Amino acid sequence: MDRMKLTKDLIAASATPLILSLLEEGESYGYAIMRRVRELSGGDIAWTDGMLYPVLHRLEAQGLIQARWGQSETGRKRKYYALRASGKKALREQKEQWSVVQQTLARLWGAQHA
Amino acid sequence: MRDIERRIAEWRRTLAENAGCTDDVLDELESHLRDEVDRLVQAGESEGRALDLALARLGTPKALGAEFAKLERDRAATWLPVRLAHALLLALAAALVGYCVARLQDGRSSVLLASHVVAVTLGYGATLLVGGLAFCYVAARAFNAPRPAQLEALTRAVLVMTGLALAATLLGVLLGGVWARDHLGRLWGWDPKETGGAIVLAWDAIMILFCWRRPSHTHAAMLLAFAGNAIVATAWLGPNLLADGLHAYGAPGQTLLGFVLLAHAAMLALGLAPAGWLRRAAISGR
Image (cartoon, rainbow over all chains, first blue to last red; front, side):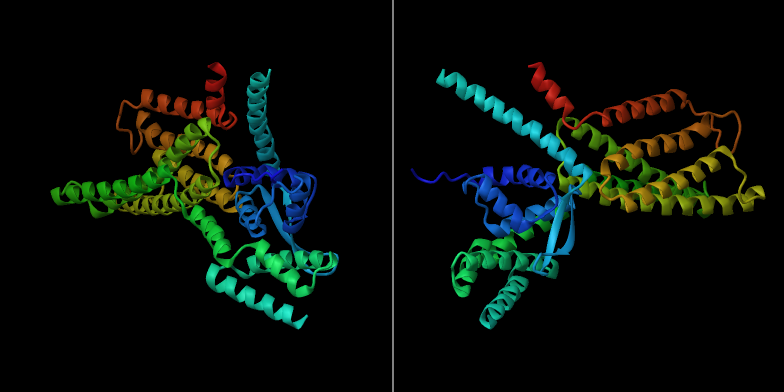
C-alpha cells in the first residue's frame, strides 16, 4: 500500500494542536517535538523540519508558549519551549474544536457504512 | 569534521543573506541540524552524507525564508477596525483644527482657549476610540476567537492611541490651567470638569502601564478600555448635568450618559463570555 500523504492544509492546521499537546507533557525543543510527532503518527505526519520553527515562533508571539535558551546533554546550545497558561486555555479550545470535527466525521462515515 | 563545520558556517551565511534569518533563528536551526546529523551518524551514515540528508530535511533557504517572511507579514498586518480608528482620529484632529480656526477668525475664541478645546477633545476622543476598538473586539470575538495578528495590531494601536490621548489631554489641561489663571485668577480649582480631566489623565496612564507591562493580555486591556470609555463619558458629559460649575451648560445629557454607561456595562458582560459563543449558539440552535 502507498504511504498515506496528508495534504499541506491539514498538516498546517494540525500543527498548533500537536505542538501545544506535546508541550502539555512538559518542556521540549524543536527537534524533539518533530521526532515525537513523526513517531506518534507512524511517519505519516512528516513536517519539513524547518517549517516547524516559524510555527513555534508564531505561538511564542501569540503568548501561548514561552522560550528559553538552555543546554543539551552534550553541552550544545538549545532553545526550549514551555506551555503558558494562555496556551493551556488555547489547547482546551483546540481540543473542543477538533473533537467536533472528529465526532461529526465519525457520525457521517458511521451512517454511510451502516 | 572541519569540512562539516565549514559547510555549516556556509549554510548559516546563505540563510542569513537569502532568508534574512536572525542569529537567534540561525542558532536554533543549527541546533536542530546538528541533532539530526548526530542521529544519522549513529544510525551508520557518514558525516558528509548525514549533513546532506539533514540539510535536505530542514528545507531550502528559499522555502525557509518564505515561511519566516510570512511570520513578519502577519506581525505587520493591521486589523480593519484599527485602521478605521486611526483614520477617525486623523479626521477628528482635522475637524477640530478647522472648527477652531473658524472660531478664531470670527473672533469668538482666543488662541489659548481654542488650543485647550482642540487638545482636550483630541485626548478624550483618542481614549474613546480605544473604547470603540474594544466594542469591535468584543463583537468580533463573539463570533470567532481573534487571530494573533489582530491581537498584536490591537495592542500596538491601544498603546499608541492611549499615549496620544495622555499627551493631548495633559496639554489641554495645562492650557486650560493657563487660561483659568489669566481669566479666573487661579490655575486649578477642582471644578467638576477639571477633576474629570485629571481622572482621564490618571486612567490613560494606568492603561499605558498595563499595555506596556502586559503586552500579551489584550483581552484584559480591551475590557479595561470599557472602563476608560465610561470614565471619559462621565468626565465629559457629567459636569454638564450639574447645576453650577465652569462647564455647566445645562445640556440635556442625562439620558445620553445613562445610555452610554448601560451600553458599556452590557458590552463588558459580553466580553466576559467565551470567544465564539454566539457562533456556537447559532450552530446549536439550528
